[in-house]
Amino acid sequence: MSNNFETITYQREGSVARIYLNRPELHNAFNDIMIAELTPLLEGVAADRSLRVVVLGANGRSFCAGADLNWMKRQKDYSFEQNKEDASALADLMYRLFTMPQPVIGRVQGATIGGGTGLASACDIVIASTRARFSLSEVKIGLVPACISPYVIRRLGPGLAGEYFLTGERLTASKALAAGLINEVVEETELDASVERRIEQLITSGPEALNVSKELVRNVPGMSFDAVKDYTAEVIARLRISDEGQEGMNAFFEKRKPGWCSKTAEGDQ
Image (cartoon, rainbow, N blue to C red; front, top):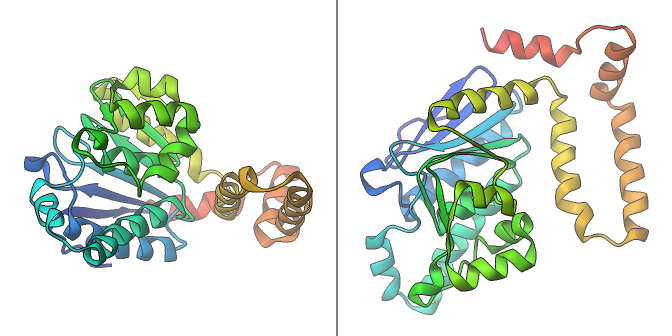
């Protein structure tokens, strides 16, 4: 995959893909260029099943301060059709991030505003520094967090999401943790070490099992109890007879590490 980007950086380290927002002088505010760079990159990473974990981070003092002001000025004069096309690109990006087959770790520091909170919410595990601040402040300028709402609401639940959508309150990292918006808070000096610990946890698990676990989290809450019985039974039956499931169970009974652990070690050399 190309690494010739204007607004992001991409680095592969063994089985780990690291994608960083890279507009530090603008607090990593996103625009149409960043969306156009991130979306196909995520598609390429998703298709490469030798990649086991994705880290989404940002360079500089902020994670993402929301939408770029110059981009917003252009949007103000767009027609409805232009605005719809523009917003659809952002919605596609959020969905692509949320449905990645690999686990996605959000590495968050500093300001995380509007769409930045959406990017973090679409990750599977979010680790934030104590300096991180979160806000859904779109209502303050007469807008709403529309395209990011499915992912924020899934994390916060309708009650808290409604409160923060309406008030635009800025949340400290500790309050965001208590609300369920993020998974862990550490001192900024410990941020990278905490991300590495999570990577180590994830790469010892079966790649397909991780993917299917993500599908369960996406699918089960919206299913009826009647439908979910057959769905979940089929999921586990399919995995039990799969190559990965067979290898994992054999390794357990033979008291050895499964094959995907040795492949990960080889890839990291």
